[in-house]
Length: 310
Image 1 (tube, rainbow, N blue to C red):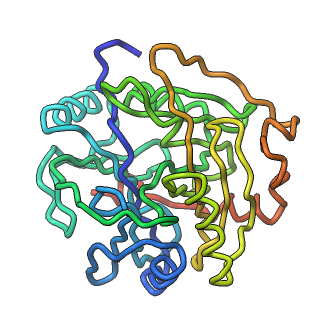
Image 2 (cartoon, rainbow, N blue to C red):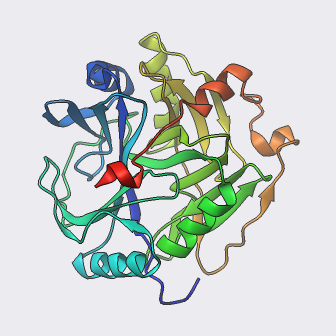
């Protein structure tokens, strides 16, 4: 990666698509702890307690998958530079930077990754002041994506968008970090898992502290929702985890205290998967069950093949 490469700044959130998806909004508001930011016909935008206009959205669709992953850039100059870079790299770009005319708005562009997932990049979104609420999610900290060609997809995110590898989980998973012009950054905002087809593995929501994390699990239990895996504490990323299954069958995670990477000194390592303590430092969750692995495999996401994307 060249020193002058434009790097994606940060993950803003994700829009998920499924039949009857908007009908599940009460789960996300009453149980998971998000709040409705904006609502239109066929789509509900949900916010956390952080400054992003929305962090998760529910879109009605004919199949199950990612409508788009929402990524941010610091300003219009960096957005234009990123666009020029991805065009030069030969990536499938869906237009030039412009104002989006939907409920969220902002200035930016969209493109497709190698698995035909749509990525939206925005800037000029006004930060929102919201009341901090104990044990409620404040942001989406990472999206984990299943891919049939992990090595090629990893290389694409690095070569085209400037993501850097933080760690590997054996030869089955790679953790990628973004962040432009920052000294420290979350261990990962995108992770890739080797799989037979493209799909979403899970989306993680960050709590402000370990106490918030545990109380969030308690709140879910009081609502009749128990973790499908966890609580435990991962090796790569050093973050606590508790996974749940949403009404649409998507896996969502509470997390906190994600490792902060020092860009000047960090070196990626390969974490073994045959040492239980490297997979779960607390040894409270154990390995995921076959049922958990199946739900994290998800349903094949057709994405937006180029013939249908424009």
